[in-house]
Image 1 (spheres, rainbow, N blue to C red):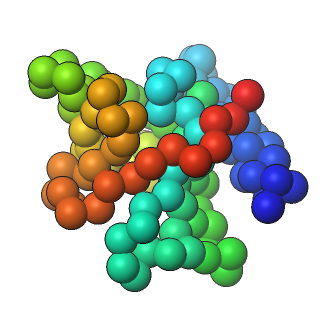
Image 2 (spheres, helix red, strand yellow):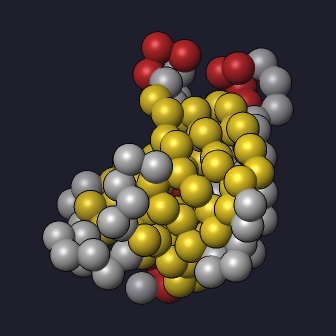
Length: 127
């Protein structure tokens, strides 16, 4: 499991470097509270994980599906003890997608704005 996480982290760093070269500027950097591996215990998501590195977001729905994308923009809006993040990701301008989620600083969890029943908890912090 540890070697798989290192592989994901390496892949994320490569995506970040590609994004930096493609955009001609520095890649957007995720804040420390988001960096790491996130899991949920919600039914139907047992094999899923979300990995955030400084410059990439990686989605996994089991080991047969892995999708790494460069972080292109990140906005943060305080909302009480939560922060509403709007993360724009994609490996090119044409492929950009948006992920909107709350980070709860008290519980240290992520909840997607459009899926409030899914609570994601950080299980590993990448260094």
